Image 1 (cartoon, rainbow, N blue to C red):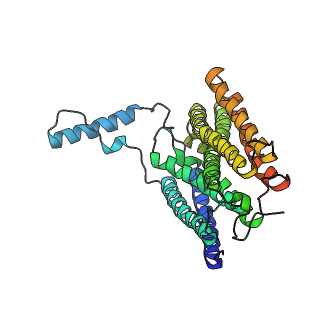
Image 2: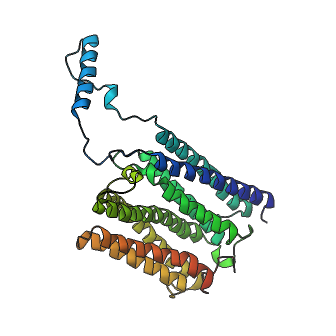
Image 3: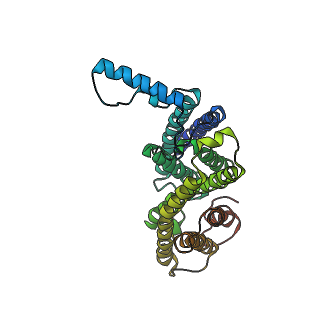
Length: 336
């Protein structure tokens, strides 16, 4: 019997997380808006005579006081970090972490209210999938790779998270209840959790791919908005998107295989070309072509990016259209 009180607390936590996510997105956007034009981490430093004079004078004074005869780093060689833009970015990261904790609490309590894994319908899959996107983003932030300033894609990550949660609560919401008999299996945890993790990584890769296309256009034009200098080069964004796709693809492959095994246990056949199965396979094929083309045909840049966008488009079609509008054995959306 589902616990109404736990389900209500879960809903309240979810609404709270959405409010905090909105604050984080505002701060990420403000960070970009107030960001001065600056050198990207993957560009060579620009050294002027004035800079050399300043650094040299500081180093000489330091040596005289300490009595050392070797060059040592000085404060003037470090980039300033206390500007308004940087503070807004740090606030945004803190708010993202807080929103993630509230969001995680909402997902856990949703499962506890029904005594099962919290992804038995479209509402629960959507909220957990959005949680996976934030988790991947926070993991990238924790890596602290100065060559790839992940924080500056924050607004483009939090926006789809908020849109997904908004769709979940406004259109896909379903009361907490027990699973239909076909879903009562250990494969629910194995298959769906893999699909959720892959969806989170694919979403980050999609964001990087779109930003690559924008950055590539700006570089070819020889200029653009000042905030675009906060992002890595187009080549760096292209490499980062490829790595994320390469990481997500085996997980998606496992999800498809696990789904086939679950189908055999539930319906007595591994594959029946149900709409959900078909589009999951189409998504797999498109991403396989993307990775194969990059590895063997030497595809780089825009051609590969368009193929990656097609893959994410098939994923979204499977998530939104197939789940809601196409009837099949996987019709567990709980809406319509």
